[in-house]
Length: 438
Image (cartoon, rainbow, N blue to C red):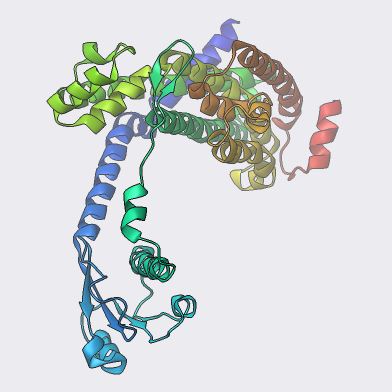
């Protein structure tokens, strides 16, 4: 056991003293915040640019129908005709020209519109014009049917369904969106870290193998202990990084709440009435942000955090044992490519299944099945946890993950103990199968 502790300590120290680890740990949150701020800034600057569209309305049905918006301005060139309008648009600072022909049939007119531009227009521009045209043609058809448009507009009403659980606690549509976001982020982060730290284990094995130092190490340490020590050492470094990120995010959250006037003692409770929350929103002057913080704190954050650690460790050790076996089987990183796809596919499948099914039906059969299957459960289950998962399902999922981890470590160790001393030959799947019999 002392030898295993030495290997774990050596791998952990080597990882945390690496410059890239320090940069990723302390600068990554700030870089991500900076990138997000930059994206928001660039989107805002892009929206500030006013795009001018020209239209030629030969039908006479769309007079004063095109209204200027914050980012789109319309100009009527009907008087000059389409040919001159095209020439002015091509030589001027216009996005394009819309031609509305003179056609008696509204159905034919709706499919006879033409738009000319120097460059392909964005979807925002096309959707804006199509919205105006569809609304106008619909109103004209209603008039032809002798239907009072004013009454139809007056009959429109929005409905809002208040959401409660059986304990009487109020919820909202916002909380479902936040659950999706939190679960998706947790699952995606887990996939990234399994790949990053699993690859780190594989590279560590390859480096020691190519430098022949592994021959000295295995003379005093069993290959199984060496592989397990590398996996646990790298997992410990990953957990340390998560802990530091959590502290940084906690500090940033305190700064954010103090800046926007949100008192933590006021929003820790989950039984604030809608009237109180509305009053708080008006008093703070930034109700949307406060509501988001309120709903985030209603999530099972502690449960999600503990399960994240469990599934991170379980998923990481499950896949890292395979990464270690691959590292032991090859002589250089280039030869690993043929073995990487079968390992990465379940991770990628877990992310896609999570986004495709958990968001629409978190308790459906597909979501439930993939949250129990060990190869995908670390990702899919984390996406489901914010929506509430029974302890029975969690127990089955966690138990199968542990059993699979033990089996996978045993499976990888048989390849590792043979491949770690094999040199000069590019292994195949047939070779790996033979090594399992030794």
